[in-house]
Length: 229
Image 1 (tube, rainbow, N blue to C red):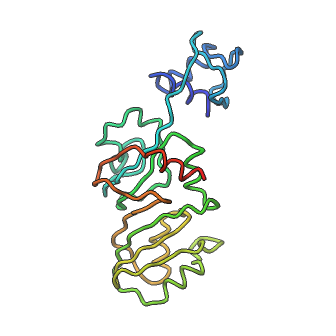
Image 2: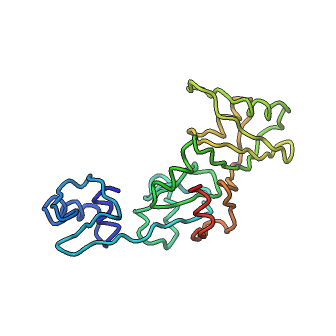
Image 3: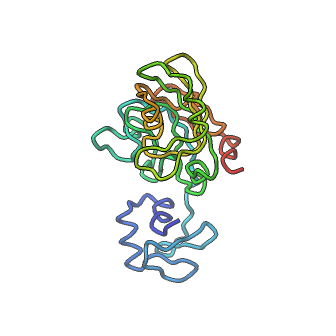
């Protein structure tokens, strides 16, 4: 991780304070002064701040039930951040592994481990995301095959990866995808002549949403490991 992030993760310093100390020569990496905050360091490096060795806090892995009307951001913008009503400490260190739109609800995974989240968000890892989708009009019947073959979305040069559609009722379906293009689910149904009126993510990989709206919990060891295999 970047040196300034390493310092913040090992102390109570803000990002700006950490950068100032680094640039002023207060930080060493393997006994050498480093003044570039962008320098990449690892946990096996010896990093000191003003002579004291730093040890970063353990990585965190969190499941949250995102409410409607919140955004997947660390700060409030037009809509409040999904962290705004939680008591998660050092939320500025965290990022969301696969964001949801403001009006979309459901499962989000949150971490400060970039290598771990890579396996969730990168299409080549084939991590399944399952959405419950409410539609404005009944499906026609050919959508499952079209999604399986891939849909060429407006503005894209390549079709979507194969997706699985399970029909629950004429206007409610489960859609399983393994990528996360911008507004992908909404754009897929728009491409087949329908409109999404409700969108809720129920599962990512093997992890199911099991907390109430707005609540969160830490993932267990088995859930964490499921994204490393």
